[in-house]
Structure formats: structure tokens, C-alpha cells
Image (cartoon, rainbow, N blue to C red; front, side, top):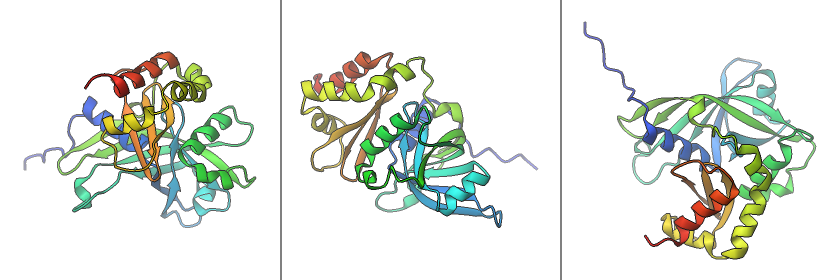
Length: 249
């Protein structure tokens, strides 16, 4: 009997980029955890953001079933990817297997995660500081990418996380970098939306930068753009964004 061909394609840079965009552009995700009482998978929906290194971040109530499950077993899976018109299975989606790390008040990452989360989900300001809410960083271990029919790939967790010595320096100045850029170019986000073929919407704004790219948001729409190469500092990020917005196509 002949061996059946593998359904997996060789993972290349195009697949890695698609996976990163599917994860980093998601405003929400389906999360699956292990029910501590029954051992069965338990699925729910969570708001999603990313830390400065691209690690997905969720904000959850300690009272929720998935939070209690993660406290007992930190393993979880995230499903990201938006279907469109027609057959939902022709659209890309990513299943990321993660290990959850709690980030509570006082944690060294808490303030930057809080800032980045609110930039993406401003309505969360109503409850983000409640004592029964906390963040989890969901450290990717491995992932399965389905880019549509016949386009299946396996990825390592390292394919989804930004590996850069400039991470901490950029994190310290990220908010200031966006403020300075917008002060110099008040229309930059709306111009970026046009250049990136974003959906027609109201006013756009930059809601996050990191060494690998930036995010713009307008209402329920979020667009992620990845740089060709990692930025080495905040000036490099500004330069990359300005070139995309204002260079002649």
C-alpha cells in the first residue's frame, strides 16, 4: 500500500507572514481550554490584543470558566481568522496552541499590556482595572495554518513571536512614537488606510506599533501591516510608516 501524501505544505516565508497577520490583526478569538472538572475541551470567545513582541494577550474575569480552567492547566488554543462572503472554509484561519502566563497588577509587563489593550479596545476602560480582571500572555508553542483549500502548514511558536534585541527599547517609547508621528502628520492613519486598501470606514488611527509592523483601527475594522524587515528602533518605525504613507506608489 502506497504511503498517502502529506496534506502539509513546506512552511515558507509567505505562510509565516500570513500566520502572523491572522494572529496580530485579530480583535477577538475563540479560545479552547480544558475543563478542570470534566477534562473536556471548553470553548469561549475573548477579546485579543498583542504584546510588543507579538505574543497574544487576553483580558479575562477571574469568574469566567476559561480563567478558572487556565489556572488549573495553562494550555490553550486560539482560533483566529475572519470568514467573508461565501464558503467560510476558503478563508485563512490559524489555530495557535499556547501556554498562558498570568499578568496581574504589579507585573513588569502590566502597564504596557494595559496601554496596548486599550489602544485596540477602548471600551474595555470601563472594567480593565476591576480587581477581578487580569491579563494572560498566551505564549505560542506551535500553530496550524490553513490558508484555504490545499494550503495547510505547521508552524513553530517562534514563527509567531518577534525576535529582536530592540523589543524593550521600542516598548518604552512606542506610545510617544505614535504621538510624535501623528503630531507631525495628523492625516497619517487615514492615508495609510487608503494605501493598505482598508475597508471604507470613519476616521482611522494607529493603535499599535512594534518592531515587525503596525496596526490601524476604525470602529470594528483593524488592519495589520508587516514591515519587510524588523525595525531596529522607533525612528526606523516612523521612517517605515512615513514611506508607506507618503512615498509615490
